[in-house]
Image (cartoon, rainbow, N blue to C red; front, side):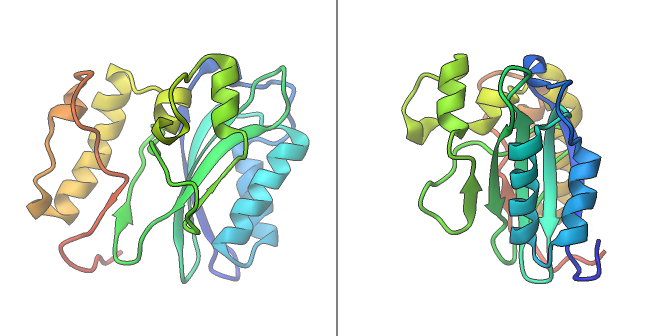
Length: 202
């Protein structure tokens, strides 16, 4: 957290191994520290981070970031374009007021709206996935998770299960199904966010 109360946290989801770029300059730690040196708001941090990876490349594997200021909280999934193309693809979504989100070493953002002030994304996030053969459907059906960080059994059982654990404590009445985190391929995914039963303390 910096002096403007911009705060950033992260979890690594690895994602597609072939997209790691060993020649890139900025890793996830440097990205966070540089953003906190420069940003006065969460949106400024997102812009700063994504501008940096566009210019200098992204040296880490897939990463989920929590980015917040006193007025907004965002979740952003980001992954490098690999050693053959500088930069990264990413999507960020603003957590609605009164809601909570969670991430635990697995990409979380699936489909997202295109014309929404609470959604920011790389202009080539879909076209790059098409070019690499990760996605072939219509734009509206594109899922960042499925394209860049497909959830295998380990991701579901050991990562998404921790999100389920946070959500079930915060909103018991939601009765979220545990089937998804057992690892079956067709189970309904967990929501990106949900409304807690009451205001949460630290």
